[in-house]
Image (tube, rainbow, N blue to C red):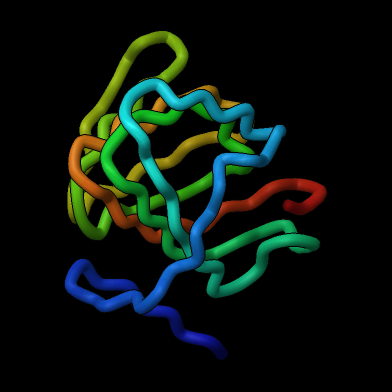
Length: 124
């Protein structure tokens, strides 16, 4: 059994730079010059799930969600804006769920770090 633990004050070590280059996500930079970094701890390409850590600097990115994803914010603050214009602000300790195919804008107010568990029928 593998146990994964993620806490707000954890040092996640070096995270890999993740470019906005996946055509399925159809990224659009809406504000600033955000950069994303991450690490997959389990799953990923060739699997129907992935578990990991994601970090994004301040700015706003619109994209398609590639899987059903449960997320918990560990540090920072983000406003998630849905395609219909509704929005919600999340900060450390908050969890939320996005669905595969959702078109959302990640408006990163303060550099944000989250842990995520995503699934995608047919794999990533």
